Length: 158
Image (tube, rainbow, N blue to C red; front, side):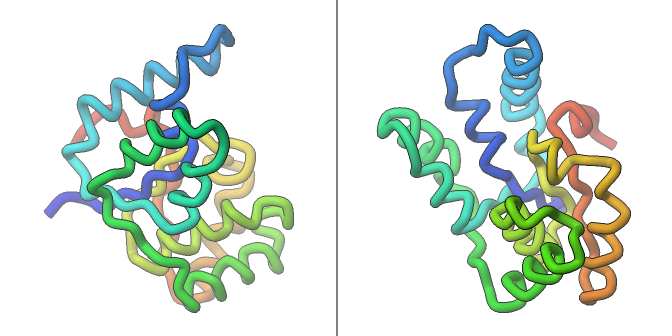
């Protein structure tokens, strides 16, 4: 059975955007493309209603590219359990109030028992300094926290 992985919006954003002139962003784009090409088939991929909404915003052509990348992924809903966990993550300051959408991503992945949450959001999600409190809040609410990681961290298989 393949591990279950939540594809957060920044992943399809990097895949669909034009190559960046910024060295770090360009590197992240290349790593994401490599992961998408070589590793995605090793996982059962999921996204969510909030990912679909975020992916659909902005320039029509760019949004269409992002949405086409999500085609075929199982779309998870923002259930009442996920909403309750997101509220706890925000209330207990595991994530800042301005990161409400990130709380939704994390809560949906945790409530649905996904193994990984793949993201380039290193400010709020893939942030080692916030990991312990995120895990504590999830555990106290009765959920295991998915492994929150970037494509770079998930390049090699078992």
